[in-house]
Length: 383
Image 1: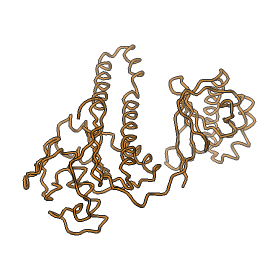
Image 2: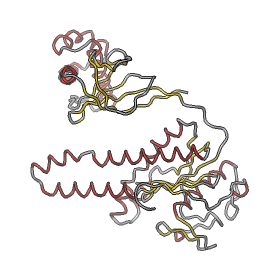
Image 3: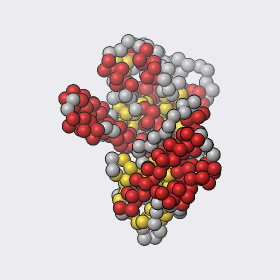
Image 4: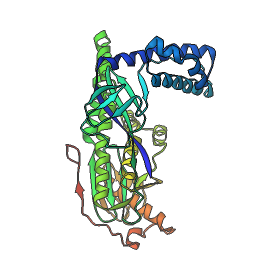
């Protein structure tokens, strides 16, 4: 099976490339004004009428002129279907690039519109390049390169890994062959909080220079978060490969923000949950795991954090922060570790079509016993 991946590559080139991107932005806004009045949505008819003008007036290549017509047609078709017909104004430069027409790869270099470019990136896909995009972000040019890779068939044998996601720890993973991985999120939470406090202080000043500083700070939290989550998802994928996993089980956390906001919680607690980037982590981890032939499953998260994995007793008092103590059998442990064990046990029960719950431990019945061997791996800072 094949799938498409993308990578963001920073590059530099000649002044001709900057001129072409500026002309493209002017041309697409010029054509947008015309199509808004004429309401012509067929890209072929748009091209027949305006192709020659685009090439002559804005000095664009043949492929770029065709790309503008297709992009304008798609934009206004979407506006019409959503019943939001208004004039489209393009302020940010995003240019579709056709492989082997707009850009190509040779043995010596990479060319864009027949001009060589220098890519500042330690890694490049060897093959499978596809149609991509060019973006200009804060006067820096990026090639959003799309490429095709082979996805192996899902593994039929191997261990099962239960993963508990959290706001304090990014994740805790427990495998059926008695291995555990803790990945601390303390540094991520600290950096995100510090960035938010900095933005609050700068915004309170209200001067012209402070507004310029806010513009420079925009996107900082997002980029820091995405980098940390990439590191965490890579660590989880490596752990699963090391333990020979065939399936990784997560909690289905859809709607958790709505549920948490409906409850009476302190503002800091609500803010922490609403900013919890669990969906982004699941996206990054899922495609990395699937690229290794590991299947990703989801289960109902009900009672996974407050149920006892030893006796099955469920009570919200069992869990207090990162500490877990069962009121029935006095079993103690790390709360996130207990959650990952419960996720693993719950999935095994479902897979075995088990109806009996409570004191019966499905892992013991299936021969997947729990031991106390734990491997710690975290970002800088102690768990």
